[in-house]
Amino acid sequence: MATPSARAADPLYLLTQGDQDTLLLGRIAAIEGTVLTLEPVSALAGMKPRGPAQVEQRATRETLQVGDEVVVSADMPGGDVLLEKWGIFEVRDGETADLTILAGPYSPGELLAIQRYLRSGGLDNDFAVEGDTIYLRRPDGTRETIFPVTGIALPQRWTETPVSGFGRGLSQSGWHLEYLALAAVVLILLYILIRYRPKPPPRKRSSS
Image 1: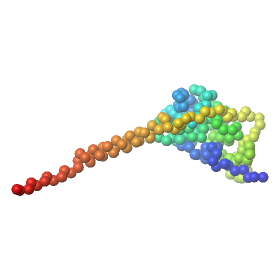
Image 2: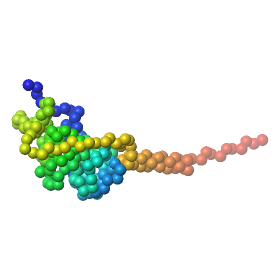
Image 3: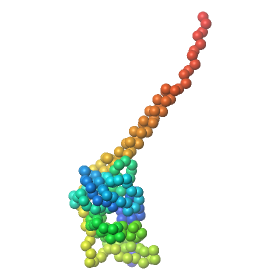
């Protein structure tokens, strides 16, 4: 029998190994185009934004509505808007220890694994995949079957529409400001160099 192994390039592996700047839990306060505003919001892992968080979606989901509770994997590239990284997940209200994923961008088994990761506070993060079966590998060498399971309602994989030009909109405002600031510094330095450069000594008149 083949030994289960995590697929290193998979979003499940990358998300649970911390390949994002932040994991946020928040309530959708507004939806403007492809940008979600989360308020209130808390950080499950990584950096916490100041005040309400704005997240530019990699893909849109028609089922998301104002008032929904979500977990967001995102990067913080600079500027006011975060970029979705490894997914947005609709969750049921509750404490992190019994948080339930209702829908997300992956298969039900992968969503259950991410749910287990979130409930454990990030401690349960060594998942392995063998065919359609997903295991949690424990430090003592034993393993627990995460999927398939029976007797529970499975999270749903929702339909997503990829966003054209993702990451080139509002989220880049921070980079634009940095370029403008750098250009301003260069102009100031040029002005100082021109304004205060030493004057050449006057020429001596030749006697005729």
